[in-house]
Length: 182
Image (cartoon, rainbow, N blue to C red; front, side, top):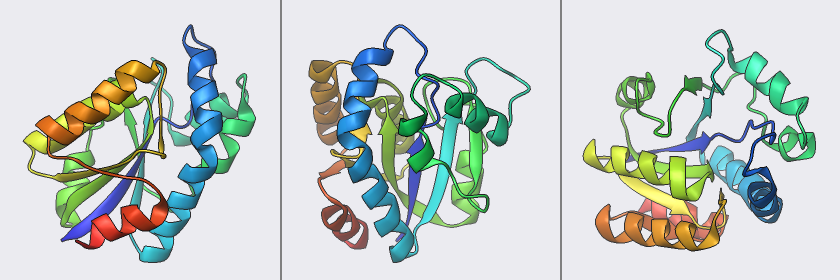
């Protein structure tokens, strides 16, 4: 089984109503997420970046990154900027699959297991896990590699992913990589 890691919505200018609780959560998980991306790279996993276009239909990857770096918290963006050689898919809604080319890319590369990391646990991660599940992907969610706005909703979302979508929850890069090898 081939695994891919999807880094979701980490290029964020943090200039919205929920920015404060989200940035607090991102601050706590950023080092873990960076360690996980590094471990995934070392393991040879395909890493794909999927990011919201924030309503700008002319924005490409570099525009989205530039806007995020010019936002309120560039120190939360810079460590997770995608490398130039990484696939980058722009999305407009919560799910990484909705009206994007992601499923096609995953099928072409014969990826059947997804590690979903990034933000927001109770929104984009949850809906992406559901859409992955209904498309017959196995889903792994690194509990220390996702950020939330509302901690209670995030915990409920993680339980839903594990129970209803049979997602595997793992903490720490080693546990995530072990889950990917299973």
